[in-house]
Image 1: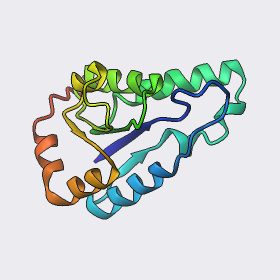
Image 2 (image 1 turned 90 degrees about the horizontal axis):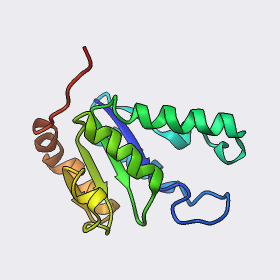
Image 3 (image 1 turned 30 degrees about the horizontal axis):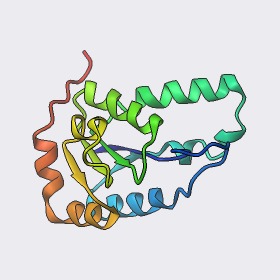
Length: 148
């Protein structure tokens, strides 16, 4: 299974800094523990110095990553607050029929409600779900259509 870890990087910041990315390590560890042979696409792990990218590098990275969100088996979106980049990754995944698990208290936001197959309030709930079999049910309901 190939999983894309989407989530807040800059969120609602008004500067060029990045919020803590520790959630990515927790999600990665939980996936490796509960999903045999998981392959993970983690934009932060791929681009840890992205705040220092040139305009051209940043544009290419952003557009490439949003496309990659549509090429996986599952997208996990960590949204403790709104994130425009994550919303775009979720939209790309949704359009491709990729199931989305949103980890967020923002369950009433339309971008979350109408794209996510499952919404959990926090990381503990996500980790519990990965271990209790619910993930298998979500994946079995996928409408993913692979490209010809």
